[in-house]
Image 1 (cartoon, rainbow, N blue to C red):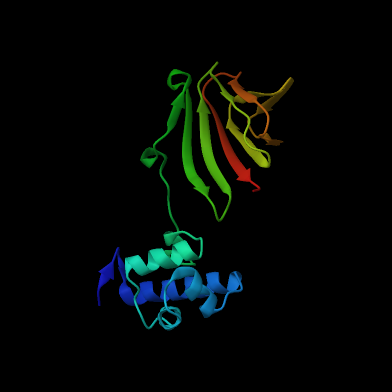
Image 2: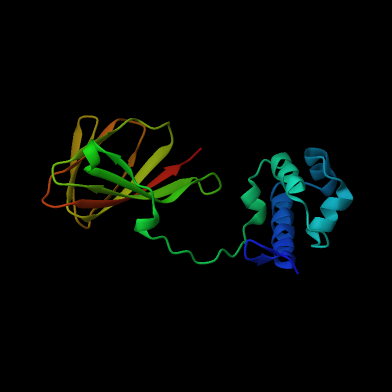
Length: 192
């Protein structure tokens, strides 16, 4: 039995079958509809859904493209394994000469429409954020330190243990007004 990225082909075929069936049903499509949309024959799609055929990468790309989904959407196990993310393994974004660090723990995903990151600000450092598109919400929690958040002409002081939600479609600025490094966890939610 062949192995693909640590997953046996039979198991991978089962994952693909389940995901394809779910996507098709969620979109209320028949096998004929999917065949028309993807250019993959109805009989081949049926075999894939029943786990009787292991599709080629080219076929998977055709299916993903025709269904307007990602390739990984077809390959990911519905019961995703637990995943530990170590800060040291992330590629942080820096600004303010390295005194502002953003660690992208959970990057944006179209299916979930959110991203989660941790922000660290050294004493006295600040970061200005441009307005996001309409419908973007920010949820933030201060885990260490004291942050001043300015949204337009309003100022808010958030100390350790405080949380806040605001619409991110207006300019805003974060500043560490406490002593020591401030640490903030942020979730950005994209409604659209």
